[in-house]
Image 1 (spheres, rainbow, N blue to C red):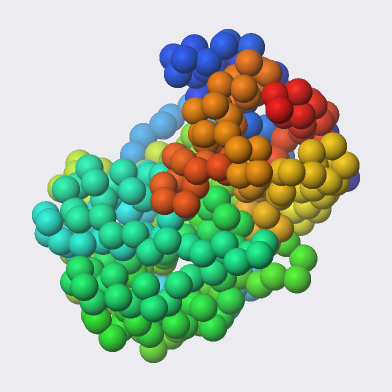
Image 2: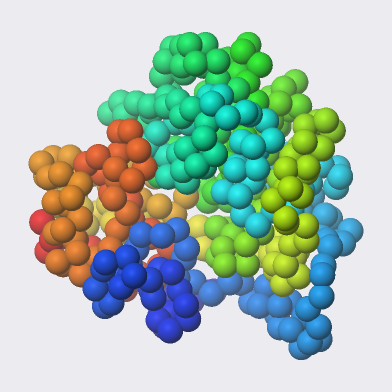
Length: 386
C-alpha cells in the first residue's frame, strides 16, 4: 500500500503552487488547491530511475531510445488500444507548447480556431496570443452533466471557416469523459468541413468508475490523419516540472509541418531526466496509478458527502475523470470576484470558474490530488468562507 496520506512539505522548493502566492497577490500562508499538480511524490520506480541517472553525473543532450518507445507503446496499446510507429512521435516541452505549435503550423493569422468552454484557460490564451480568431462552442450543463451542442458546433465551424479544433478529452475542468458517440460526431463534423483536430488527452489515465476513455485516433481510425493526438506523463505521475509531452501525428505531411514549427521555435531535444522519468513511469508505474485512482475517487466522494451535509447549495458536478473537482456555486449568488475575496479571507486559493471562459462564472475548480487531511482542511475553510 502506498501512503498517499503522507504530508510532504512543499514550501521552499520553488513550487508555483506553494511558493507563488505572494507574487500573485495571495497571502503567503494560504492553502492552495488551484493549479493542477498533485501533492504526492512521483512513483518510487521513477525516483529510482532519476537517482540512477543523477548518480552518473553527466547531463548532456538526450534522445529517446527504443526502450522509451516500447514503454510508451505498451502503455497506450494495453490501456487504449492505440498502436503507433515511433516515427509518429515528436517530443515537446508540454501540451500547451504543442498546442501553440499546432496553431502556428496549421493555421494562419486571422484564421479561426474552435474551443469548447469552459475549458483549460491556456487553450484560449494560445489562440489569442498567436493572433488567431477565437471561436467558442459553449458546453451545455443539462442536469448534472455537460454535453456538446452539436448544432452550434457545426454552425460555428461553418460560419467562421474554422481550420483547427482543440479538443479536451477527458475534459478539464468539467470532468467529462466523452462517449464514443460524442467523439465520432465531433470528428464527423470536422471531417465534413476539413477541420484539423488537436486532441489533448493528458488526463486520460484518471477515469472513474463506470466510464471509459476513448483515444480519438482509435475511435475514429478512418480520420486518424486529421488528428494530432497529444499526451504526457506530467499529470498521471506528477511530473509536470520535468516538462515533457508526446505528440503523435500519423500523417507524414502534417508531421513534417509540425516538426518544422517546433524547430523554428528553437526546441530540439527534451531534457534527459524527463526522458528517463517518462520511460520508467510508463514501464513500471501501473500499480502506483491504480492505487492513486482509488485514493482520488475516495477524495471526490469525501468532498461530495461534505457538501451534501454542510453546504447543500454547492454541488459537485459528478466526476467522470481527472483529479479536478468542478463545483457549482451559482446558488450562492456571488460574483466571481466576491467568491474569490471570501475564499482568500478564509485562507483558501482555488481556481476561479470564470478563468475557464464562457460558462465558468459561478463555478470553482478544486484540485483533490492531495492527502485527505489537506482536503479536510480545504473543505473546512470552504464552509467558513460562505
